[in-house]
Amino acid sequence: MASPSLLPYDYEEIVELNYEFVNKDGIRYHLYFTPMDVLYPDMVNTYSFNIEREGTTPHSIDRRIAATVIDILRRFFEKVENAMIMVCDNSDGKQEKRRVQFNRWFDFYNDGTLSSRSAEAREGYYQLLVSIYFKNDNPNKQQLVRSFNELMSRDIYEIVV
Amino acid sequence: METKDRTRQNPIRRLLEYKRAMRECIQRGADYEEMKKITKDYGFTLATPV
Image (cartoon, rainbow over all chains, first blue to last red; front, side, top):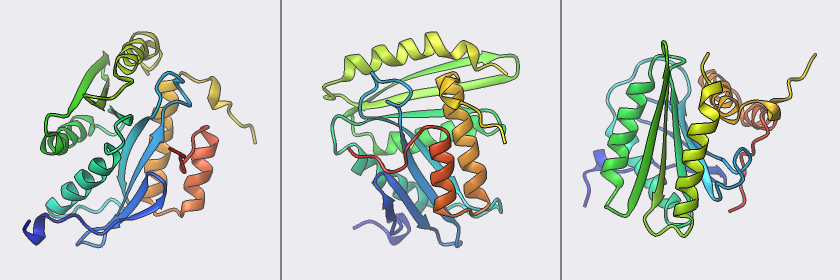
């Protein structure tokens, strides 16, 4: 049995694919998935994953946050058609930190049944990091990769600020 | 007040701006109704039928 310090927090599904939990420091976290087909109709069952916390006060290292995120991702990928996009930008200078953090969670979760593609756009000081994750047996895999490549080649040029 | 037509924006820019707006909203502890409004303003949905 997992150590209590590695167990996920109890989280609540506020509406479908939108979750909240409160950690040991009393900080409320919000995790939500935004459907991408609004932007890219070819990206069926694809969602942008987001995690945000209330307040800005620093808190101690909390491994149960990772356990909670991993549990939610596990639920998300139980539906084999689901795919997830992670977008990190440098508007607050924390894009690398977020990507490293998320990759750590993802590597811990991934048992070899998931694949990913990543891309990066740079222009001067501006940096945009985008990744897509999907199950190896996702029936829409080829379409997703094609759509992701088109997205990166077609839409990134306008992002530069 | 002028309302920006966000559906005409570059899709990734629209997603980024939405994420930033939600981050700011969540950081200051806004309620769910405000999050729903921001989500709607950007043309997204929070409750997603799968």
